[in-house]
Image 1 (tube, one colour):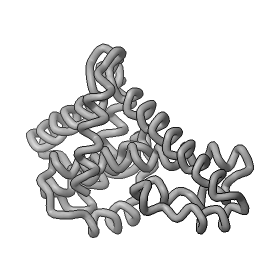
Image 2: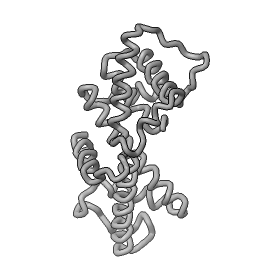
Image 3: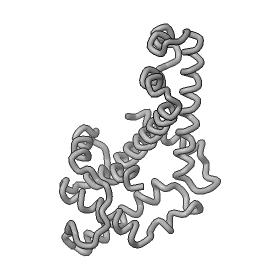
Length: 206
């Protein structure tokens, strides 16, 4: 959970006006408290979108921290979570100028996309087809008419017909995994199609 969703929240805190060091501490403390206080109990399958839960929880956390006016300190008995501060700032430096909420939505969508690609790559690797995935993955973002199946066939040592089938299966499996990832962040019985359209719309603005 921490590895998957810490950066969208970190980007939100940074865009909210906090300096890198403060944003690191705040994000670290938020996840530590999330786990220690069992806040996730409130994010059960009957409570809607997980992204909404996390963002609302972070907003409340920041308000409480502001009112407390406390200085967060590293160390002690805090539960540490895997935050890569240098990588976060490197990524944040290339982010567009968006409002905090829009930044969170953008990074949430990108995180789901990255998770899906990683899962798809892992499946290919497990099947001994890691090289085929590397050769075909660019096809996920191309229009069908712009895919060179002859070039792809040469790279994968197959026929053009086989390459065409492989790309079709790749894209179909990507959609299935993407849908599963989105469904996992929604309440049981949630409207996956509506959430998918929202995520795709956010990605369309990237």
